[in-house]
Image (cartoon, rainbow, N blue to C red; front, side, top):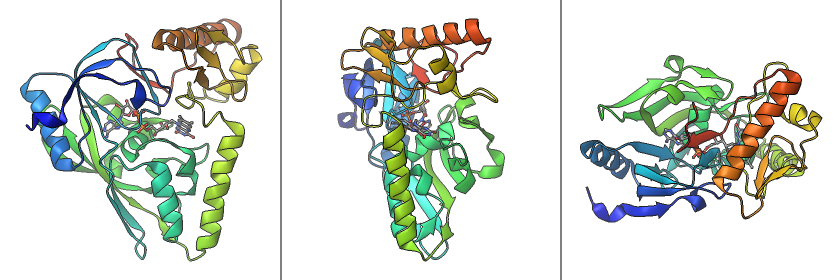
Length: 297
Ligand SMILES: Cc1cc2nc3c(=O)[nH]c(=O)nc-3n(C[C@H](O)[C@H](O)[C@H](O)COP(=O)(O)OP(=O)(O)OC[C@H]3O[C@@H](n4cnc5c(N)ncnc54)[C@H](O)[C@@H]3O)c2cc1C
């Protein structure tokens, strides 16, 4: 392993969109699938834990020392779009807004919704990211992965992956997502595709604190309820713990007002859960993934 690409004692706070994070014992940003594979192999040979992150847009990382290797995929960003067949092959680190814009410009329909999700394709597949009506699973054909334990590389077809609302079976196995194949519908009305994509982003920025440090929706919507409405009904909009605040624009967002610690954010999550459980009898399950907390992810 070329040790030059591995940093030691690396501060992760700039690698999450909410701008908090701990210190990774080892950290690397591979630029290719080859480097990605070798990093996982290196960490296995050292018997270390290995955690993969994308754009950190759905992550709360505790402000502690994180043992082992953290790999960020953001630099694995190659992709090809075949406009006639609609088939796309993309590495895990491709950002959804980049993909969404490129699809529209190439005359492919079906990715317009993804413009407002500031995450990587790998993170989106892991989370089954989406909107109310559609999620990334819809356009997926297959996913290439590395098994962190056996180092085997395999391609899994969509039918063999369990996708539910903000859930994929990758949340319960040891597979690192390398790349994916997707399928979109050719549509010659490029102008309309670009317009819809732009409008979707506009809608996001008008209804969510999109440009502030957050990690998107904190909680999943419980069946037949909206998490934001439940939190708003508790009168919690604007409620703060330290530098962490419940957004006044959208109650299912927590904002880091520049000085929040991961502890402030975690406590705020717990307070919301307690209040909603006490008053409404509903347990809010976090959508956000956590690293370095004793929390069942
Ligand atoms: C302003 C804002 C708006 C958002 N809006 C939406 C929305 O509308 N809909 C929605 O669904 N989400 C939304 N999100 C949340 C987030 O953007 C998505 O969940 C996104 O898909 C996460 O991707 P990521 O690359 O940032 O993943 P990360 O946050 O880096 O990681 C999320 C999880 O995926 C795992 N992971 C990441 N990459 C890999 C990989 N290659 N292999 C294996 N595991 C991996 C990580 O270990 C972690 O557990 C929003 C976030 C923000 C900040």
